[in-house]
Structures are given as structure tokens and as C-alpha cells.
Length: 410
Image 1 (tube, rainbow, N blue to C red):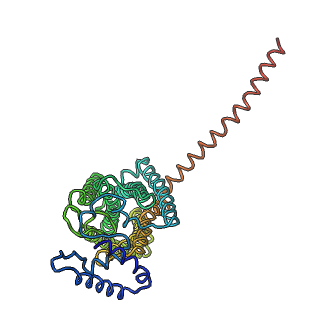
Image 2: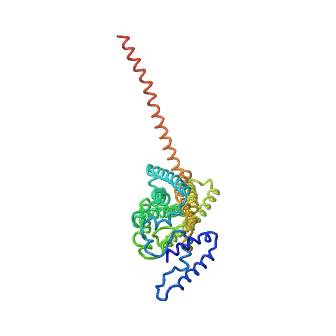
């Protein structure tokens, strides 16, 4: 029966590629209906597939994602429907983007973490504690995402077990969720700083900042570990996602809802922050004579608020294409073209992680001044290292001349 299906499907490939889907399904049903009518009365009736399965088979090409046990087997055949990069040019493009974005992301976020924790003043401020959490999340995301993504899509390597794959996916999920949650904490920090500047130091302390970050990371790890702990389509025998192996569609829907809620909260908070910042700017313009330390504090808050709004804008632009395709995959079967688009859109996550430190260095005066001090220190060390050989070369002839003079005197 299935051999006949393969022969018939091969013969009808040309018609399907030309868009003759209606005639393909019509002749397919007529063909197997006539075959069943010719069978003997006592012959066992063969099991056929419903029309929806045939539609899924034609849309996904060679990837047959039926509700059977093979979807939970970690092998090249079961994973080939997720390895959507078919040409060498596509693999080289993905490898180049991941290598470029990933390398810059690792270097920049390591630099941000070094600048914050090497400065006693910055590492005590809650604002920079939240920025360091964001940098750490982006750093982990770039390392885990690049290694797993390139190995899977470029080198077509599969993990030896389902648990190892879900563990890697959980690491990427944890990092990106922690990055988004850190942005939410930074938005709340700016909101409190602008709305209640007199009580800011009492409400937002270093101890509370570290406690909130601890709770945040624990929640992100717990949320990302749910597929590994049993909420996957293999354990529940449910519908698998078309974009991620072994991931349950209901879990993917829940994670998308979580991301949308976080984004919505950040947008609402920053809308209010910008409104309050506009009020502060108007107040400072009318009372320039009374400007003192309080207004200097307001200027710093407004500067940081604008910086974080830029980060939020980049975040939404980088996350929106992939989120739209995730939502679309829940309701509609994706073809290989959309899967390839999703693979390229996933690299925008790295672009977001790469742009964040650049925005901090350009907008934050403290980080920028620390970076300039670090560069000047490196230049001084290079200059001193270059001056040492010259000093030695000048010192050696003088020693020789001294010896020669001593010999003449003798």
C-alpha cells in the first residue's frame, strides 16, 4: 500500500509543483478508491490517511510528521524536516551571520561586564546591576545559541538523546527570557527613579536588586526546564511544534504569551516614563535658575530612559519577525520556505544582543568614560612596552663606551 503511495506521489510531483493541488487530491482519492473496490470481499482493508495528513505531507515535502512514535526518535531522518537549509549558500550565510554576530556579542558583553564590575561606583548602583544581568543573559544566549544553531542547521548534527536537545533548547530559552525580563526590571527602575526621585534610594537598594535578579533567573530557568521535565509532545503524546523538535504546541503558545506580556508591560512602562521625562524637561526649562543636584539627577534619568527606549525598540524589531512566524506555525502548517525564513529571522536575536552594549557605550556617560579610561590605559601600556627596547638599545652603547674609556685610562 505505502509503496504504491510513493510511486503515485512521485508521478504526481510535477503536477503538484505546477500548482495542480485540486486535481492531485481528486485523482489521488479516485485512484485508491478504485483499488479498494477491486479487492476481494474477505481481504483486509488497508489503512488510508485522511486528507489533512496528505495536505501536511505535500506542504512539508519529504518530512512526514504524523502522530506516531518516530517523531520522538533522535535521528537524522526524524530531524531532517527541521534542517531546512538545503543549499550550501544558505548554510554559509547562516554560519557567517552567527559567527559575526556571535563573536561581536561575546566581546561586547564581556567588555560591559568588565567595565561595570571593575568600577566600585557602578557595581553598587542598582541600575548597572540590572544592566549587568542583561549583559550576562546576552552573553550566555550568544554562546549557547550559536553553538547549537550552527551545529544543527549548518553541520546537520543531532544530539544523542532527546533530553540533551531539550537541555540546550532550555539554555537558549532561559537566556533570552532572562534578557527580556532584565529589560523589564530596568524599565521599572527608570519608572521609580523618575516618578519618585526622592524615595528612589530607599525603594531600590543594592540588596533588593540582587534579590529580584535571583528570583528572576530562577523563574526563567524553571520556565525553560518544563519541556525537559515532561511538558513535551513525546511524553504527553500531543501535537509537536513545526519549528522546534519535541516541543509541545501548547508550551510554545504559553511561552509566546509570556513574551508578549513582558513586551506589553515594558511598552506601557516606557510610555509612562517618556511622559514623565517630558514633564521633567518642561519643568527644567521653566525653572532654570533653580536647577541644582535634583535637576542633574533628572537629566541623568532622562538620558538613561531614552537609552532604554532605544534598547526596547531594537528588541521589538529583532524579536517581532520570529514571534510572528511562531504564532503563525501554531495555526497553519508551514512550508519549507517559511521555515528557512524563520531560521534567518532567528539570527536577529544575536543582532539584538550585539546592539545592546553599543547603545550602552554611546548613551551611558559612566560606561563611556570607563571605556575611554580603559583604552587610554592600554595605549599607555603599549607605549611603555615599545619604549623599553629603545631604552635598552640606547643604554647598551653607553655601557660599551664606559668600558672603553676605563680601558684607555688603564
